[in-house]
Length: 463
Ligand SMILES: Nc1ncnc2c1ncn2[C@@H]1O[C@H](COP(=O)(O)OP(=O)(O)OP(=O)(O)O)[C@@H](O)[C@H]1O
Image (tube, rainbow, N blue to C red; front, top):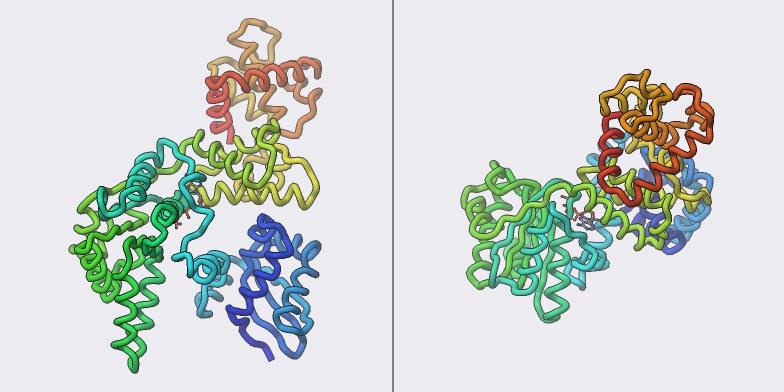
């Protein structure tokens, strides 16, 4: 008989696994899995993944840890089968089942482990929030609110695209307040959770009054309410009405309210006008996608947390490469880095640009793999406004030799061509000339940020 896997059981299995593998492996391989069903007769435990690479790794390296975890939770032996499904199939499956299993790791953290800690994730604090021009205003007002809740900026409304640090900042505010005033009541909640608790209270017809009382008490008896992703209550009338009363009660008693959203309040068009205007009563701070330098700083920070040597030249190059490629979502930026760290540990290989290109094929488009010396030559000539025949010639004037060296450097970096082969592309030069050009440009890049910017632009044009 096939049965659905209970969410509680799945969480127990995951936490058992979590204890037996490193954090980064856990997040990379196990956290994204979706539990499908368990066949009691055949003793098979089915899970799904849309990532065939991850399936391969799980099957070859982790299956016994996985099976042991299942055995310890079910107290019976099961064979674990990992099925490959498309993302669409997985989404449909999740829609059909009650829980959002893919978010188990996050839920576990927020709903269970941190229940006593007012739902705050200890990883999100001000100390490890990297400040750049994209978020310095939001960071400054968040800190000001944390230092003097309900005094300076109330309500505080933070908005920005997905994965840009809104939740991180909200949790940082919560931690800071609790650290300086441990008796404060800080409540962090996602609007989704607020809505689902409200629905549960409303649906419980027998205990409606006591449930609603408990609900109101929970949300109105706090000193600080941090409510995330408010856009979720758009179009939900009862939730909006309840939140309106919660907001008023807290505001009247001078309690701090911090709201986050993926959009500016004026763009929340399916929201009650009264709420929309309240959200604009005080400070509105936006978070924009980080610039290149901030992306690099975030990645270096993260690499340090993962105990990786960030002074290593190859690692620095890989960090630059990831920062060049992933521009709009810090969650994805960090995930690319943690994946490559995890792969390097699994395959026991050094992290180099080549290794990163090979293993992060989701962030490098197929065109990255089809870069040829011809394309590089053409792009460089166009950029410096010289002819192909000039770059291939023996002319030694800087206007020709500089682009030539840059093109050779890029051929070595972006293609698999050997040094002699690259030499051939540039008018039949010797491989030592190519090596010299490569080393010269590499050395200059370390000290000359203008040149680094110049090369980054050319790479953007090539890819
Ligand atoms: N400035 C930053 N410095 C360091 N880490 C950051 C920064 N901004 C975001 N992050 C990290 O990026 C990840 C995503 O951030 P977070 O969950 O806060 O985004 P969000 O804006 O709330 O996204 P969503 O709208 O999808 O919920 C987290 O791991 C967070 O720690």
